[in-house]
Length: 226
Image (tube, rainbow, N blue to C red; front, side, top):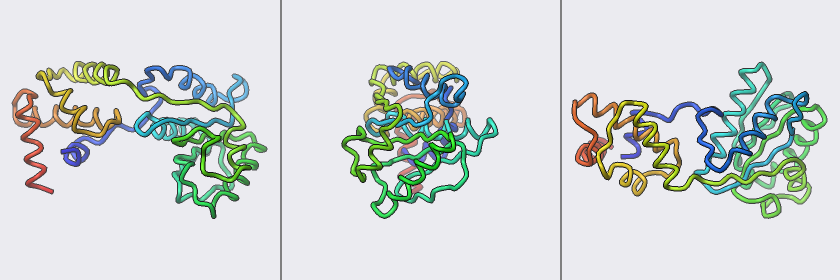
C-alpha cells in the first residue's frame, strides 16, 4: 500500500512553510535566521539531531532549496556518499552519524573552509554531538555552533495535521482511516500526507467515499500490481 501511495502521490517538495513545527518552533526560527544571514544575527554553523521521522531531512532539503532560490550556491548531501564542494554558500549535510571514516578528514576540512568563508553549514544526525561515531575534531566542529534537538510530533499532533489537510482538500475521512494509517504506514508526516493525497485521488477516480473498505481495496490493488 505504501508503495502505491507514494507512486500516486509523492510528498510535496519540502519547504519551511510546510514543515509542521509542533514543539520545534524555536528550531524553525533559528533556521530562518540562518537564511537571513549576518545582518539579522543568524548562526552559520548549526546541527539538528533527533529520531527518524522527526523532520531533519525535510528541514535540510528545505533550507538548501530556500538558499538556492535566494541566489546563494547551495547543496544538500547525504552520508555516506559525500562529495564535498569547493565553492558553496550553503551546505546541508544529512545523516552525519553515517559518514565513513575515510571521508571524515575531508568533512572536517570543509567545515573549516566554509566557516572561514562565512558560508552556512547545517548538519543533521540521529545522535547528540557527543555521541556521534566521528573523529573527535569533527565532533567538535559539528557542535561548534548552535545544537538543536528536534522532537517528533505526537500521534495527536499528527492526527490534527492530517485532519486539517483532509479538510483543506474537502475530503471527509470515515472513522478509523487515520488510526489505520498511523498503525500501518511510515510514521513520517510526509508519507502520511502523501497517503491522504492518494486516497483523495482514488476516491475521486472511483467516485466513492474514503472509507476503510476503499483503503483496503488500494492495498489489494498493490498486492495484485507489485
